[in-house]
Amino acid sequence: LTKKTEQLTSQLEKRRKKLQKLSIYHHYLDKVVESSEDFAEIREVIARHDTLVMTHRDLLVNEHENQDAIESERASLAKFREEKNNEILNYNNRVSGFVHM
Image (cartoon, rainbow, N blue to C red; front, side):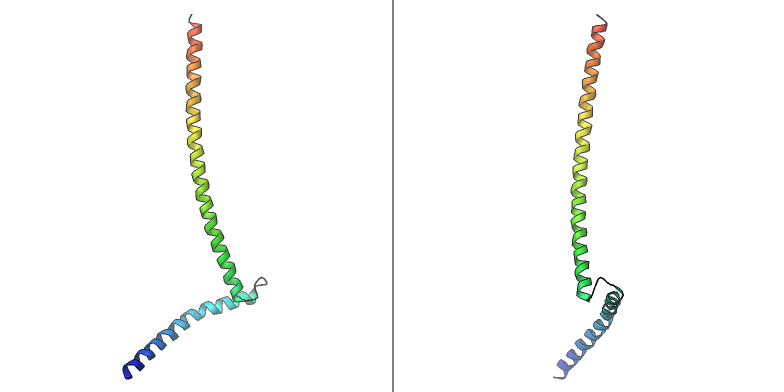
């Protein structure tokens, strides 16, 4: 029984310390709510944060997809330019052949 009481007391003390460490965030969010006209409660601030985090993730995914598409288009453009330059060289060779006749 004494050992169990000591364990529970130890747990209680750890949780009190953790609560004290985390209370600074609660105070900070209280100040944000007090100074803001956009938020009436802390949960609105947290909800807005969650929304912004999700939007940021979506934007990162979109940016990655767009970068992949750009790289693909650059490769296609390089191939197209090479093909057209080869065509121009072939036409120039043909024209040169006609001139020497």
